[in-house]
Image (cartoon, rainbow, N blue to C red; front, side, top):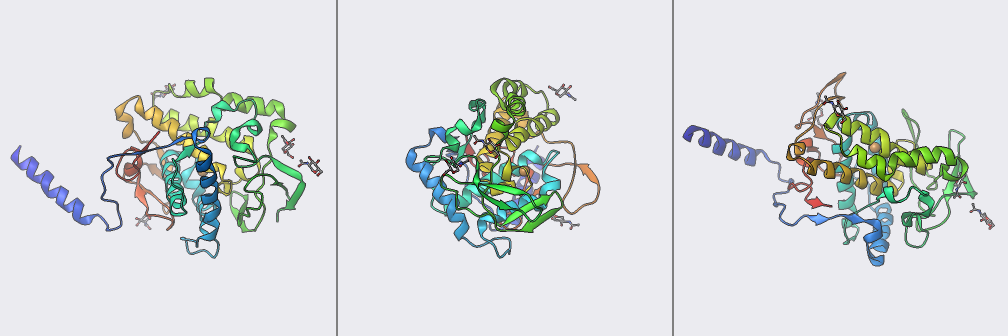
Length: 325
Ligand SMILES: *[C@@H]1O[C@H](CO)[C@@H](O)[C@H](O)[C@H]1NC(C)=O
Ligand SMILES: *[C@@H]1O[C@H](CO)[C@@H](O)[C@H](O)[C@H]1NC(C)=O
Ligand SMILES: *[C@@H]1O[C@H](CO)[C@@H](O)[C@H](O)[C@H]1NC(C)=O
Ligand SMILES: *[C@@H]1O[C@H](CO)[C@@H](O)[C@H](O)[C@H]1NC(C)=O
Ligand SMILES: [Cu+2]
């Protein structure tokens, strides 16, 4: 017993000494609470949007010649094969949303972190307050203002709301090719032109299916069904910028992924063992083939912020993240 506690003390010292100086040492004593977009005050909504636009005025942290705003799409494209279709999906995107929120705070945002509960919007995303031109992110793309991508695709520019002049710098033409292409923010909602397809997708992200999904009994099933189900159908239901892997071009990406994160958090709340339930095979960034994942795997941020281990983000109330819903 004595030897054991001495060993524990010794390893604690080694860990403390090995911790890089830039890691937070603050304990998570009062986690911040993320709330739904509709619950934010009007002033906070405005301030959030202002901070998003402010990211365009900050320099890249990835060594690019484009602003910080575009680092997010660039990194997401670059890592796409490693952060989708397997276990890293949830932890990587959890940390990515957190890093984006930190950047918004550096741009002056002081309100609550926020998510978009799209289970409330199965009647049509265009009716959602998040897509309001006055108090939200603006509506559908417009046929009145279009641009043509280098691949010959017509982009329908968002012509209303605060992002009608936002110009992302990168566009993935396909999963392997991203071009440096300054373009309008574009959306292409299939809910009007293809109501039947939308109905199928709305069933996937609607309350009944999500409630069913939350009863999943194991990580592998849960993670896959959440990614392939509601996560994917919201991307497809917004269309435009949300389909290619440069999807963080779309400011709604981060509210969407905060909701995905919230669902995972809710699922984790059901059983404390889920705070460390992480397994399955994945390919890893600088390795060939695939291997069993580990809580010690790194989540790469490309210089935007520190890389962290999966372990550090498993609990949103841990010292690294320190938030709740
Ligand atoms: C296009 O412009 C016309 C005339 O200004 C307007 O009536 C119409 O609503 C616009 N359409 C869209 C999709 O924005
Ligand atoms: C949104 O844009 C798409 C593509 O142009 C179009 O098919 C659809 O009718 C538009 N929806 C609304 C609500 O304007
Ligand atoms: C995982 O959960 C799903 C859905 O709850 C279930 O169908 C499947 O059998 C489970 N797999 C294992 C290995 O427990
Ligand atoms: C792979 O990447 C990780 C994280 O950046 C790094 O720690 C490790 O040394 C890299 N391994 C190789 C073989 O490059
Ligand atoms: Cu993604």
